[in-house]
Amino acid sequence: MSRIVRGGLIQATLCEPATSPVEKIKQAMIDKHVAMIEQAAAGGAQIVCLQELFYGPYFCAEQQTKWYSLVERIPEGPTTRLLCDLAKRLGIVLVASMYEEEITGLYYNTAAVIDADGSYLGKFRKMHIPQVQPGFWEKYYFRPGNLGYPVFDTKFARVGVYICYDRHFPEGARCLGLNGAEIVFNPSATVAGLSEYLWKLEQPAHAAANGYFVGAINRPGWEEPWRIGEFYGQSYFCDPRGKLLCEGSRNTDDIVTADLDFDLIREVRNTWQFFRDRRPETYGAITAP
Image 1 (cartoon, rainbow, N blue to C red):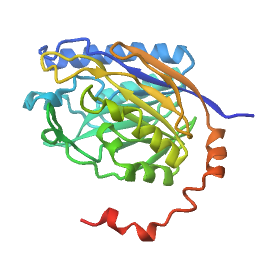
Image 2: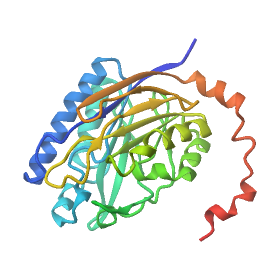
Image 3: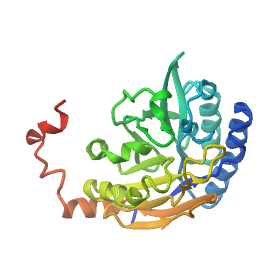
Image 4: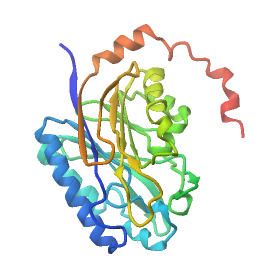
């Protein structure tokens, strides 16, 4: 019997202007996402991933210390606790990207992974931090991740996470595969004119090269007042052959779901023995300074 799991991706427009008080924005976005998560679960979703920095705007469009007030401890903070309670009530796995405080002044772009019984399983910290014009001033806000490429045993699948800019680096995508990921989620905030030509190229390639599913999530719409570009949505799932299974809308709220047959992983890997045929002893140039 096939092992089929329904995955869900949530892309959501900013529902409160970025010029509003920070706490007002945060609460509005949390409330909006809770309702969308409940809707996804009602539609049968079992593993749900949210977009990058889901409870705020993409504030890296400017360099302002006021956005530091969005940080929370993970898992001790209130948003992680709320999501744990929500996951338990709905019986779903949640992957949520948030702004994490390790200690005062030391912050990360982090995704928490929560199991269907409400237990916190761990976190991934974004490894590659961009400083790209226009309006991606992430080094001002985040320290590079230091937790490696963990994979989490959830009720429904072995889950890995890569965050936005990470997807441009195939090395970590391979590490997630070697660490046992069956699906890798990539919560993102990326705009047309900069990376759109890569959006449906890189991540299906990671899926095919490593024989796992990918869930790619992107914000939709424009965010005022910065207008650094249109967040073009188009969240999607692709299978271990790199085939797109479904796709979300471009610039509106959307819940993207797909039934994922995890037995396909074995079928693909038994055909393409990429892990067997690796030659890591020849790859020293990859890790050389």
